[in-house]
Length: 175
Image 1 (cartoon, rainbow, N blue to C red):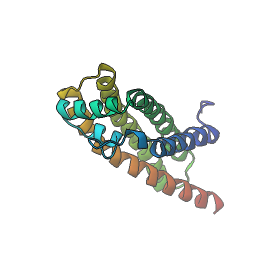
Image 2: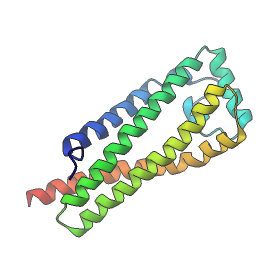
Image 3: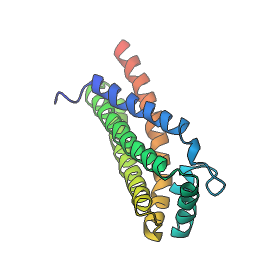
Image 4: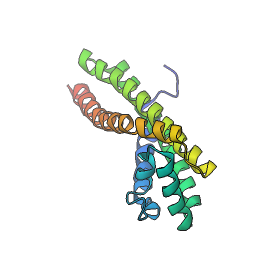
């Protein structure tokens, strides 16, 4: 097995990604405006260029465009860390598990974290492109809005699934 696939690296990437996610959630308040009452979440689900333009105008008027850019860059880093961590963890569980069911769960985690990373990158790159152009795009807004629910579902399944897999692995190793 390659050296980079280790439990140490799993914990660094997975927990590092989760910690960055929490930081992004806690620091998202400045992007809340009357037009975007849930801040960056409104931008993710905007679905039309007109809505994106209204949100970005509200951020510009509040002097928060630079803040929004850094927040989305932070999101890109989070996606990479958390996805890589989940894929590493899934692969380790798949390779080391004794029971066939836990092996399948590990392989499923690899797939789920890959899909999470893919859809979250598609969403966030669509968002940041509109932000950097300072203009909404119906195509990019639609892509981001389409990717968002898939990203959310895979994030929830991946997070809960990994916790279950880690507990299961620990119990299996104790037996």
